[in-house]
Image (cartoon, rainbow, N blue to C red; front, side, top):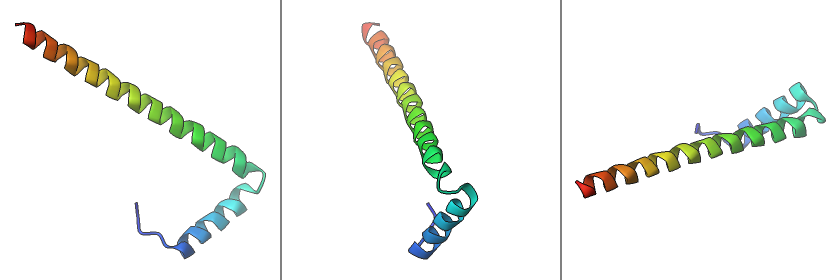
Length: 64
């Protein structure tokens, strides 16, 4: 992540508040949270499938 200090973060937060308004921010944050959660779930599924595939490959080579 870029080196953002406190002044930059405050400016970004003020810009978001002005652009979206106070009522839209909670809805926006919920949507962002859902998106991050879905991304992490998909990432975990891919990781799990890769690990299972590696285990199957290891078991096949062990039996030969």
